[in-house]
Amino acid sequence: MFEQALGLGMTGTETADVSSLVNFTQPEKEKFMANVMSLSPKLRDLAIHKVLFLDKKISEMKEDRARVGKKFFTDEMASDHLPDPRLSDGGNSYEVENKISIALHERGDKVWDRSQEMKQKLITSPREAVLCVDCQNMIDKDRNEEVPHTRHCVACKNSHNGNGHNGNHNGK
Ligand SMILES: [Zn+2]
Image (cartoon, rainbow, N blue to C red; front, top):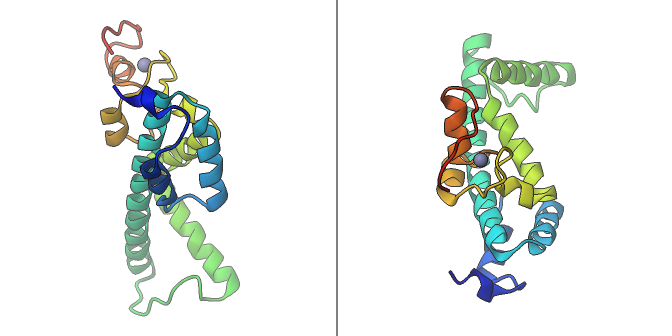
């Protein structure tokens, strides 16, 4: 483990990684960086790793949303002429946007909502974002890569899925 050797300084690579985030505004990136700097090297490493995967996941969901939106217009409006809804006149475009939200909501887009919550948590409190809400252990990288919006470590996640939450996790 070489984390300790990094001390409080960010390496060039980490800074470059964070500035590549596409779903974060500049102020959000700066706030994240400032908060992440106060963490121990190990937690900082986890938080940066998590933020990169969450960012990627949000981009994937946006692409998915765009596709769903298009399909929704086609099916629902049965029109072969589909102008960009944002360019159509006022009330109409509001209505269209609304229909998309409802469609996505009904589709059960929980992952989107949780990802947005996790994004805010990473920005305002990156330490909490990488610690399991149940046992306070660090959520490992594999778990964060797989489910970037997660708030639980593997052990707690598994115990939720099993016979209730009896809290008997060994290891990790
Ligand atoms: Zn846990």
